[in-house]
Length: 383
Ligand SMILES: Nc1ncnc2c1ncn2[C@@H]1O[C@H](COP(=O)(O)OP(=O)(O)O)[C@@H](O)[C@H]1O
Ligand SMILES: [Mg+2]
Image (cartoon, rainbow, N blue to C red; front, top):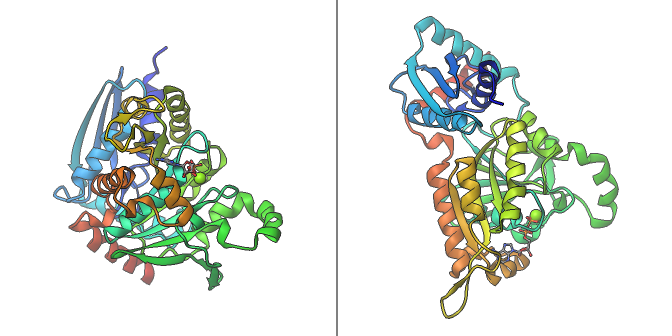
């Protein structure tokens, strides 16, 4: 029942095509940085050649390469050799990067240094939108400019949860997200709920539906964002396939609830995400133990789902958000619970800290990245 070496090699390449070199704006397979790959049984040996061996991005690329390969079923061991490209190979790679930057993935205003995180789950009602609203607020409080794309076209709830309800306007035929300052940072939102009046919207929503998310990505001004959070509709299917095409750098955070049944549903989403070649980077458990006023914790919905799923997927459990009435109230009032001080707020603050620590925007990786990127976009601009 094991996989053949060829099958495994192909899966490794598929996964590695989602390891992104932020300084060059493309994945390491397309760039030709994977210079050797062999598999024997479940053992995978891969060589990744960098433009500069001392590049500060080395650690990140190496770690993401390892994680991408380890996420494949049947891999027992990963050996990564990091090398440096020969000068000619490096020149060819820079050439390729330039061409990719010009005519590759669809044109968007999303900076290549922005971190793109999609919040997904198998079913509705597990708290995706609450997590999105609170995480966006937490990251903005840390000073980031956070784009929020409400990809739940039919079931949008972020305009209310974030109290951003103005009508969207356009400049140069592109939508301008509705923005507000939060702490030292800001949030910019696009949602179907900001586009037209309830009544007549239904009709053209139907027409636009299959293109709406793509338009929110491509026909919008997302300049200056450090993060883009996407609140996905329940299940997977079309939207995540679309994302793989239109925003191939998207990474997925899975929200699950404590019971094991929910964890299995979430596991299916993870499998689907992987099949559409999106990398799953973390799990968030929502509606965990409930802390009563006298301080004792009660696991209303059972426990362990988040931990089990994160172990199964071999990704970190980034947060355990307790059941907390403040989360509901905050969603209704448009003042996310994280702004308060209860157990939900503390858990969300902890989640936001972990995300900025483990999944920082790419430009924060200092050194060669930003400079090379500037040089590259200048070169592309001149071409
Ligand atoms: N940690 C929590 N504690 C209490 N209620 C919550 C929590 N998270 C979400 N909720 C509530 O559950 C409902 C569904 O949450 P929502 O974020 O809309 O889920 P989804 O976007 O996955 O459909 C909302 O009424 C929300 O206020
Ligand atoms: Mg929702």
